[in-house]
Amino acid sequence: MLNVTEKKMKLLAVALPALILSGCFGGGQKEESKTEKRTAKRIAINGAGATFPYPVYVNWAKDYEKATGVKVNYQGIGSGGGIRQVTERTIDFGGSDKMLSPEELDKRKLYQFPAIIGSIVVVYNLPGVGDTELRLSNRAVCDLFMGKIKYWDNEEIKKDNPNVKLPHQRVTVVHRSEGSGTTWNFSYWLSNICPEWKDKVGYGKVVNWPTGIGAKGNAGVTNYVKQTPGAIGYVEYAYKLQNKLSAAQLQTKEGNFVKPTEEAFKAAASHANWNMKSHFYLEGNLLLQPGKESWPLTATSVILLPKEKKEKNKLVIDFFDWTFTNVDNTAIKLGYVPLPENVKTEIRNYWKEVVLK
Image (cartoon, rainbow, N blue to C red):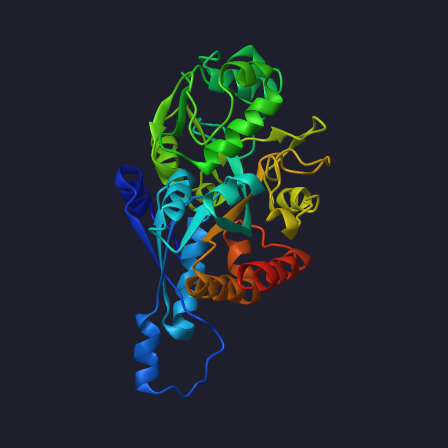
């Protein structure tokens, strides 16, 4: 398993350079000619987009390359950039944490299918307050990101944390600086739990933040929170795990507090109603699913394919088909949730009956 070191995260935070993911097709003959191997290594798949699934894509592609030598080159530029570049046909596939509606897919002449389930967590840097010790109500999260709560020992936070010693530390909000699917999901969630946010800010890949400092990519937000006492931000769960950040308990749709755990992510994912006829579009992604144990910020990362590029689409599909079969354990170790088997079957039918027809 690839560990994303702090040094690499710092580099990503500054420039978010191209993330080169290497992969290969599985199941080939053991005895290959040198010509066949050289031919396989010339095959490349080029993608760009969401940083949300980057850690798992890196590991999947590394294992995939060992099987056949086929490369997957992926630039982690944010979901907005991925949608734009695949629409412009400058890449073979786009990665996005914002699902596109059937109407938008038709307009851009794209196909769409889910690749992995992840989650967004609210991370904080509070000396003396450990991981998941802090409870943040919907109202507290709203007021923090609206810039209304200035210090961590505010009464709105204290009332849900009677046994936590909250410091008189100034709050520093950290948010994404570029077009981001993670931001789309996070701001959509805020719009549903916070009327003031809905009225004054709204949701989207880019929003007009009332307060805070922008950082590039999940890596950039991770790095800034880690280095700044009093900071609060939102990142994909894998970044929290790999960098040992602290994450808050949040309220479910029913109002009870829940910790960000694999079980809570699975509980949310179990309520999804995917359908290939709508290109697997879910309004609101997997956010705020019902259930007392469902993590409210669970989300799916999707792959976008140009409709007319059947040969390249077959290569991209072969890669993800291989991942569906071989590397679920890698995803779990990194804090993601593999797609349920019935969803994988539906996606394979979609590939056969729609994408490659």
